[in-house]
Length: 113
Length: 110
Image (spheres, rainbow over the protein chains, first blue to last red):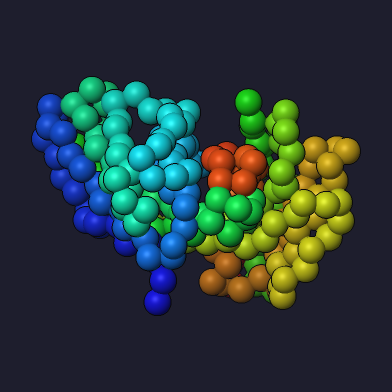
């Protein structure tokens, strides 16, 4: 079945360390997105990519970096510059040709210890 | 920019009807979407309105009034499994970013 796979499901990081969250999709979608969700709040866009080798900053890009070397993959690195990284991170994808039907992965819960 | 406002929480009993309102501001309108998210889970797409009026999908319906910058999600015949957070969202142009409201937590009681 087609879908989006995020790994790991839970991640613990020491302060000052960089960590990379994986996101892989087999839906043949062109566009991919990273969102951050804090408890009881909505989703905020970190980065998005509409095509391979191109990506744009979202609303809260500071302290994060991404790459899009393959259509299927859009990893997110949370750097030590991110002041409050503990959150639930969600990856999503879409065809890029319509305005609905975004598909989300099951998320990675990152905790800084 | 884009912004969306929705109530933070709604409580109702099984079998009841709940309406979740959403007001938005945007410079370019490409439709209004609704997503459901159970605790700790992934958001799942529920409905999309590009034109004014009501869209019905089983027990859930969504309404849009572009002149009022307003929409709502109607949950009918509430079931315990409907306890979740519901988000309205504004898509950008195709392939562009999706902006979410803060979410409405729906609690269904027996």
